[in-house]
Image (cartoon, rainbow over all chains, first blue to last red):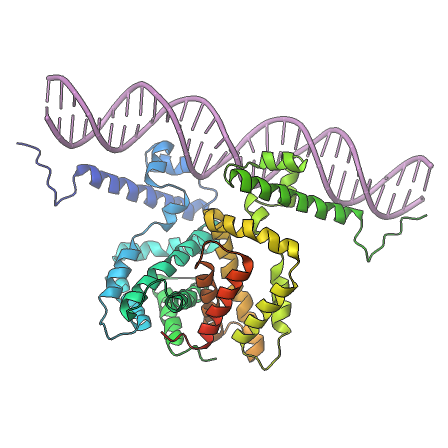
Length: 200
Length: 200
DNA sequence: GTATATAATGATAGTGTATATCAAAATATA
DNA sequence: TATATTTTGATATACACTATCATTATATAC
């Protein structure tokens, strides 16, 4: 029996790594909830996940990344591009958000409560979140550019993308108790209002 | 001669404190420019400013604040409120920015080059800047609310403020070489474009 | 002018995140 | 079974930041 490396199924090693990463995140979020973010040390997290502190930093570059790590961006990109071509950028974004949300695994939705509470209350995490938002300007500018057939560096396209991000940001900072669905509903309302031309 | 505390002129102490703070900022920015932000330690800054490391933290709560500290917000608020009542919020903001810029002391403008370069290149500083931007949503929402006679918590008002911030954000992330005037010109163009209804 | 309260400073010690290095252990490949 | 390669853990270290306390400087009261 040769150990013919099944390329389709990701080998033992990668699976074990994924499991370890999930375990770290799981125990860390639990500890954060129990004792608070700042009061929980890497040492405690490492002990709970049964690894050494050295190993922790091989899975998460910083403590903050435990809370912020997810991989929704590629899904959002795909969903945006999959929207009907006749939709404008704002409508396409609303559709994409809706589609991604409905397809989201229950376990991710469940964790979202703790995560967004932490992001709201811990300054460092809020800042990192904002950085991700800002990084999305480039991303959205590119998606918008594709859809309307213009260069992504176009000033109008970038400003448009900025306005979209801004409305989402305003929705994000609207309420403090923040289940995912409720937040996304606010984002949707904000984008609808932007599309209507921001009538005051 | 009694030491009758001249209330108008801020006493010795406060002046000396202001001078010390300025000296710290001055030497720190110089060191950042020479050796880089991360490579410069608080110890080095303290030594250059001829104070102890302990004292440093009594003047700046964090290393980041050396770069980010300024007091433009109150000026911007005053300038916004001083705009003619018949102007809409976006026009008023454009006017306010213009007014503040022209009144800005030359020494502040001179420092701006180093500061914005650092904010662009050092992640922690960029994040703090973004946090300030996000905080401005509340501020701008309030100013807009006053101007159009609506509650600041109004969803439309907040989303409108978010869109304004978003366009400014997009302008901020447009170019890397960033003299203050050039950046503010981009902000002005972005707001003008927003006012025009974001035509693509 | 001297005594007393108040504030600023510096020295010291400590916590916790993050980095670097290197040997030991686990896993893959030949 | 032998040999690379990866993963891990142990150790040492840097540096931002906090807390505490004695010392010094400044302001106020007598």
